[in-house]
Length: 395
Image (cartoon, rainbow, N blue to C red):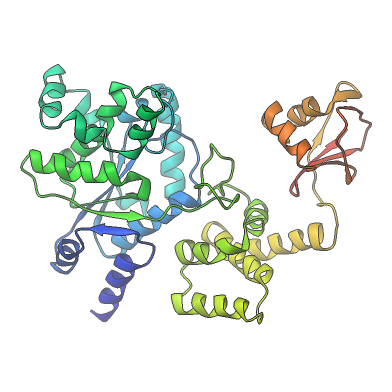
């Protein structure tokens, strides 16, 4: 009983931004009822990252208490795309793209949850059966004024950027998903608050009890500024190698250490508080704490020995100024190159614009010497490097 109370306390307090309504949720959690806990996922990208981990960890806490976790795959709404945080209309995806992304999502989520116990649903189950009168029915229950209250839409309208009718319907459709699933609780990031609240309103309009909602903080990415996202190339992915995870965590700004410790790891909060104080009084080095954090993150997805190996390789490469033992090799068809073109060809960057940015930042080296000239000559065994962790050896 005491253990259950502690689990509920952790669920309600750690890694939580806001709960609506907290008294209602507390009653539900202590009632003995098996709750239906919904997470809506639009599979608009193939990989999960630590920003998703924060939400999945909260779901795992519900699962450990015996509640029913529901993965609602937005294979129907995903073709529209969630407008949350968007400054433009999101491109529509094909069904094949969504299906491929879905496979990856479920496989990677299995690293956190007991996926066999997760109820996996698709909103195409009901939307493919709906007719035009459903749109008239649900839209009659809400007003345009309420839908355009959200900040994303206000900013776009103010800046004369289009808001499509599909995007206006998105929160209504996401909300109706909760009606079909009879959700007791829905979880999402703070940027999802409008959609989650709309779910409560839609349930009320359809004479259902309103779901309680939990919002979790957004995790900043490796740039330390914007939320973690593949779009910003500042993410730490579930499928990154142990070595990649270690290097990315070590690149975090020192000020983000504590948020990562709190949201990503299970280290007790009083221990985190003491570590922070030790840094403030200069009894601990932020670099050492970052290394410990990196190993904790790695151990979520890999073995402890993999974390130790990643730390060793990182120290040899950067602290001891050694090149990595295994550098990918690439055969090039010519010797003279435009530097940006070379970086794209080797796969060290994804585009000419990224290449230009890396060159401007002084992040490009050949044989460990900084390179900035536009035209270069390459020979066999040259090592091309971008940043601290990307290398290619020329055959």
